[in-house]
Amino acid sequence: MMDIATVIVTALLAVLFTFSASIKLLGVSRSLAIRDHLGVKPLHWRLIGVCELAGVVGVLIGLMWAPIGIAAAIGLALLAVGATAFHLRAGDGVGDTAPAVIGIALAIATAALFAV
Image (tube, rainbow, N blue to C red):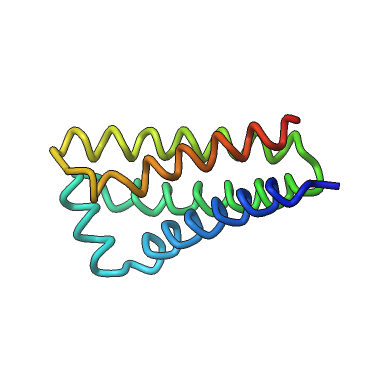
């Protein structure tokens, strides 16, 4: 049985990446503007959204089987590291880069909590 901290951090991670994936996959205009600003190809943008959703499913399964949760959380952390790099390359400030950095922190915390 997972403790309450694990459940809360995992839920926050799942909400963040479900939102991120949804705006990519639904083609929300603000998301498309970010995609173009970052110089990401449309197909890659959609694939990132699919990977984000797969990671969300994985961390939620991790609440029942920790090894899957750890792997999924690491995958989400890596996606967020990539997002951070793209934002920094584009010269974005803290406000635009913060969601990706928060994603890294939540994903690392989730993986660590699953590991204990």
